[in-house]
Amino acid sequence: MLYWFADRLSELWGPLRLFSSHLVLMSFGSLLAGFFTWWLLPKFWDRLPHDRGKAIAADGGVKSKNKPTGAGLVFTLVILAVALVFVPFQNWEYGTVAALYASMVFGYLDDRSSGAWGEWRKGLLDLLASLAAATCIYLAQGGHVWVPFAKGLYLMPAWSFIPCATMVLLVSINATNCSDGVDGLAGSLAIEALLSLIVLLYLVVGYAPVASYLLIPFKPDAARWAVFALTATGSVAGYLWYNAEPSKVLMGDAGSRFLGMLIGVLVLVSGNLWLLLMVAPMIILNGATGLVKLTTLRFFRVLGFDVRITSKIPDEQERRKQFVLIRALHKVRLPLHDFFRKKERSENSWSNAMVLMRFVLIQGFLIPILFVIMIKLR
Image 1 (cartoon, rainbow, N blue to C red):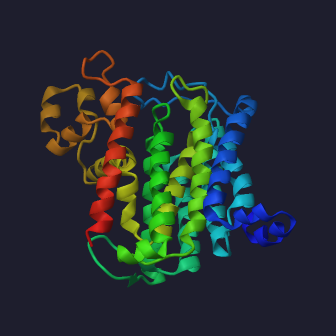
Image 2: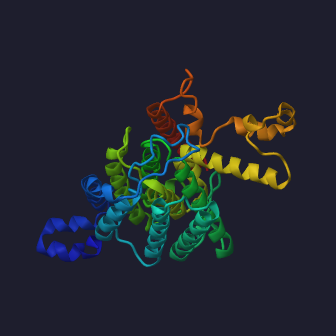
Image 3: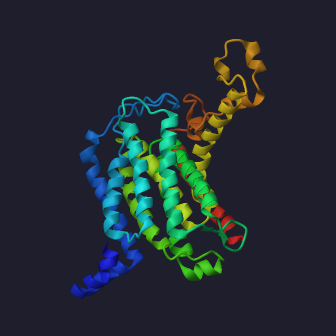
């Protein structure tokens, strides 16, 4: 809003023309979103639902059980309020934002429900929100994409772009949701991903000289999404103030699904669907591998294989008869953060703080390396 009125406001006071600068909008947006989240969250978390605990967690869900959850409702609404003032969105971009918040609402309703929603129900709702966002992005900027290791711009028709974009969003949503199992982990990894996307959208894709030098299509609208992304980053930082271990509040599906979809949306706005691997490698490795394991086991179950957890098969001969790949999958606990901290009495196990720091460090090192590989080597 301020962007469109900057010229008129400057007539009242000259310095107000600075609100026509995306950099100024990003700075104020992130600062205010962070402050209001930090200030408002403690005032509302007593009204939030309480975590039911996750039996599949390494600690059996004991540490998280009964903590306020669904804090994503608070910090995403702060993002929306600040974004309406500072982010100069246009036309179909509002439709994409609406789909983002639909995903958040679906997650919050799951947080509030007395029993966990089934996988099919959540999957269908994620699909609807992702399909809506992918369609709006296509209508806003078309199906022009660029790919790693190749020059030029390629046009994907709607029948191919929308399904592929929907899949990117679904992977990002569910991988981020699966990473939300250690205090501060999903939020910290999401901030790293968002910051890398901000640099990409504002200084590479959205800046003509750099885009031309790197042989990447210039997208003048990318800077608007960079403002929204930095506003979201500030708000997540305000939430992490209270989510540091031992956490006082959890983001729940309302937060993790929103952040996952936002990362996916920004990847699609960049014009390169493969960049999800560059900006969120540890989110994908940590969360999406669990989806691969689940899908693989269900595939083998349909084929008639015994997919029971090997250690729970009472008969030794039946254990040995179990397909070797199934036994191997059961030896790895996923998401990966649970694999590294599952043996609480083992000398090789990681504490929550170790998982957080090491995952953040690994992703921090991988992002610039993958940036060079996927963007410069073309």
